[in-house]
Image 1: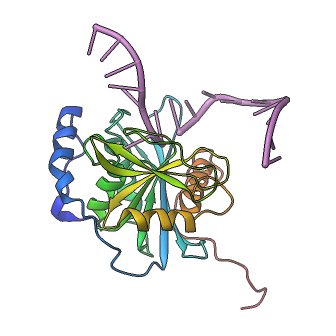
Image 2: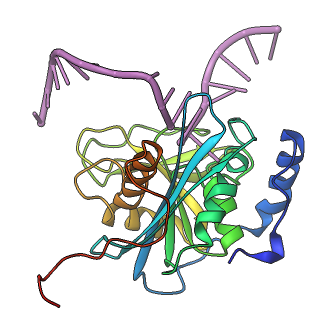
Length: 241
DNA sequence: GCGACAG
DNA sequence: ATCTTGTCGC
């Protein structure tokens, strides 16, 4: 269920989208997590080359084990183009649809993109977070705005991301000698908690597991290797049971 | 006007 | 994001 108090139309022009961001930016809450993390989710989208068809998915993992417990995969259409700074208006509609089918509601969601490390401090992670009224973390593979010093090459080290004199996120090295990822507050969380959770979600790869799993699933869906749906294949722990 | 620019 | 093989480095 989305946060009906702030629902708005997705059928808007780029100009209207910017106006919505400037109004909704004030709804972002920066606070400590209000509950322990038992489940964490990753959300992502996949596209075909020149098609309007999008493959969306959200994967819920038990935390900190990071074992899948639920998933929501669906195929739909998009019209809004990719415009730097307006990514949310292209990807959120599909992600919201996927969110509404999730059975196990996660305590925090990692989004593939920026949170407040955005020109108007309202990237997709913040927008999505406000809409679902849940804690979210923005974890992008590349920079949108801001300046930073290269963090030390050791996993776990980070440096602050600045824009207009304010700290908007961090460049975090998730593994030794790999390009850093850009972590920022999405909604209802602090930057320190975001960094901590991202590092606790790393399992041998640069990208945190929730996002990586979601990315693999939506790509498998696009290639037709798996079908849309919401059930997670139960583990065959025992031949009995 | 020029350059930058999440996915 | 997507189109794509091999290749360099830990």
